[in-house]
Length: 624
Ligand code: ASP
View 1 (cartoon, rainbow, N blue to C red):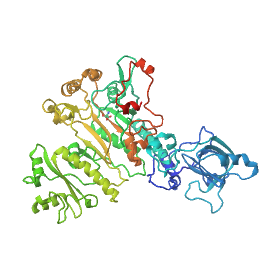
View 2: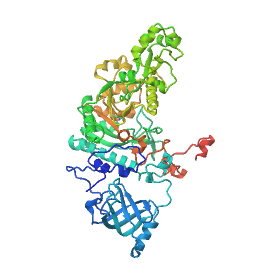
View 3: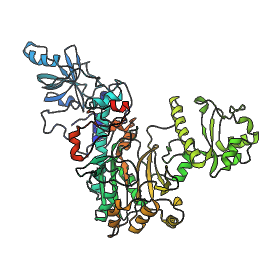
View 4: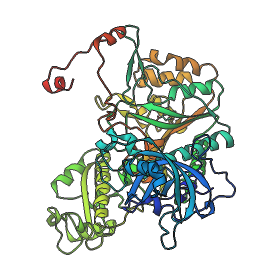
């Protein structure tokens, strides 16, 4: 059996990089055909009326009688028709003789994108008319019978990848958008990677795939949850942000290697890398430490990785949270390029420049800088290394200091130095944002900073266990979730200086995207109770079942969750996670196709003892 290369590679656990191109991708991606002799390719035409897919016919099929089903992609001069399915394109000859008038009528009159079934013989194209750009370009189909399975009305947009359309229109007609090569490719690659992950976890490492409830109860702290009303007055379910509690309870239950392709919900607005419902590869193991989980994930990604992408190199490098913040100004550094943050406080210790002096005199006050190579290209120069420093502060920096700065920052002509003064964390995170903005700007000017074919994984470790609450910095909240175990060497600090306690949490970062996170958990009820009640001041009643479970011989355990949508988004080079989800929500959390969320008549709300209190401002009222 033959496959276009992208498909055959997918089904061998491989895939091809997608180039953003205006070429007809179906053809260009299908040229080099590599078949695996070891792996059985799936049977795409079992149980259905077609004998073959549109993309698989070659010269070796000459003379065969075939039945194909597909969508009409082109028609030329009422003579040729090109049929398309997920597999590729095939040319069909519209019969011209009188005896085939009814077949001719069907094929000539059916609008583009109508779905048809044709039967006929595979013949070779006349000499000179072969199309080397088309994998099926040596053959065509001499049609004997045709059936219009369903006609297509006038389309809201053409089903061609190179036709530009707004995302809103794509989402409104998602079922049409899914016919595009790009969406077909993304969703099929996603399915293949998940299949390989299942294989690795279940077949090679004895994990058990277990479903957990999505109707659950409110979890203290963390992200906002969606509520689901119940028929008991004033009682609600919550949709879980993750199966965190259940996976830990499974460990107590002796299911010591759990995984799930889990749907999770967070009531937050969509962003390019977020949407209200998303999928995690959720994992938990008993009797494991941080290194064990990290090795498992490295192996999992290596095993499921598409082979023709740059390979996954293991073990992944690791960096502490403190180092990530100090060097890249973020907990998810994109390590594909430099432009690291440098502390230049010492250069300005005795400065007379007011704002620097001011910053340095405060607790944790620092002066930091990044050097943007060739930054003069993109920025009005603030400080550069040429003789005439173009900066409002330049006049105040003595020659000696200038030399010291140039040496520290390793600046060259035409580089730009961005400098900030302030509290360490704030200064770093500001420069971290500027670093990424500048990288984007430089790349729009053609400087290649981040190799798009490179996959740069990084573990970020040693996060703080607690953070000051935003609304009340005197109180603490969990940096991740309250079940995260403290770092063994910091446990004593829990009772004296909890803010200084590091956790056993780890994040997995890929090309500057957080694609996973997890931790070793607290398995001691007393410690869990102390953290929840005394340090976090949470209502422990909400978690009494967890505390109770820990008291019944809970094994030491830990886990991780990989954000599947984000992972596939990076692998496929898609601009947003919505491009790797079949039916995503819009930026504002709506399903534009079905108009969800929708209103409910008051009588249907009655059984839930709910009444809508309509907002009074006119804009909101109009919306209903
Ligand atoms: N449940 C966590 C999350 O969703 C991951 C974990 O700790 O395993 O981020």
